[in-house]
Length: 143
Image 1 (spheres, helix red, strand yellow):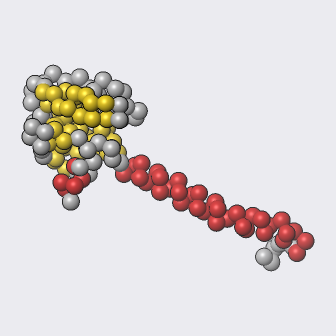
Image 2 (cartoon, one colour):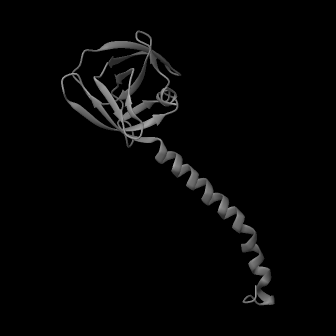
Image 3 (cartoon, rainbow, N blue to C red):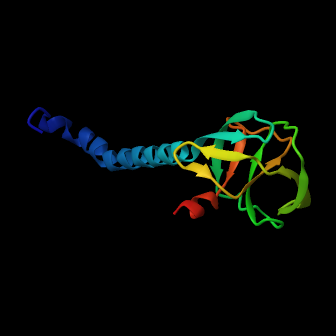
């Protein structure tokens, strides 16, 4: 305040009042960015024929799909794979559908480790920035 003259103080008080607002906006975007980074994972799916799929995964809080035959968590990919498939029913807001699934040999998620009891579902839809939707219930098995 020493450097600010008394004549100009009426203009600076408006800027001082806006500082908490700018700090709040900064904290909001910082938190959002941290949550976005925390929800991204590198995923390796080891297929039964010896091939490995290297995928960028996104932890989808809306994906709670469990296949009813073996009570496995389903992660969804958008890559074509030549495996033995079976169909799993699922519901969305738009209706009821069937998704092609297979059981991989092994699934490794970077930062989580080997994940057991997983089925992989295949869809034709393109994802934006990733190619694998991880099941939110995977984290429950770890904790």
